[in-house]
Amino acid sequence: MEMLANKKVLIIGATGGIGSETAKLLKQSQANLFMTSRDRKHLEKLADELEVPKDQLFEMDVTDSRQVNEVADAIHAKADQVDILINASGIGILKPIDKLTDEDFSHSLDVNLKGTFYLLRAFVPPMKESKKGMIINLPGVLGKVPMAGAAAYAATKYGVNGLTKS
Image (cartoon, rainbow, N blue to C red):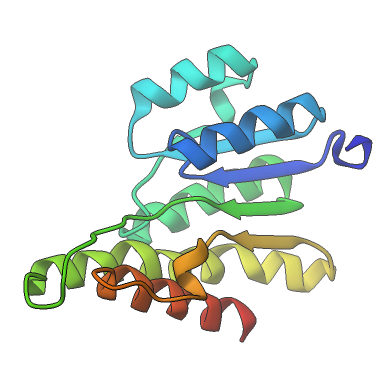
């Protein structure tokens, strides 16, 4: 894990279960963390615990392309580019297809798939230009193996896999 020392790592969805545990592990490896969350209070609490500077915290909703671009601009101004982007954001609406509403499905698409698209569009160009960088999207097991009652979630996570590999 020493190879992560001083690497600039951005964690999207840092206050969720997977995001916060990832942040803790990476901080132990001396990574230079940048973190986002929709919940500023929880983000600051995690940052205090991990001793992450406040200017490396960003309140952001991945469904808002303007916010994603503003955060990308702020990070690129401070750090040129991130070395590793970890997308731990996501929403899991688990309902049988006959109970799934249009709003449920649209919200799943907005968070899981369109949010990932906005992130890639904002953070990939500097990585391509420098010919270095890594993006880790966490689609979960349902991004590879569908499950009854998880149509919206599985569909969006399959989409994340396709988007990431394209």
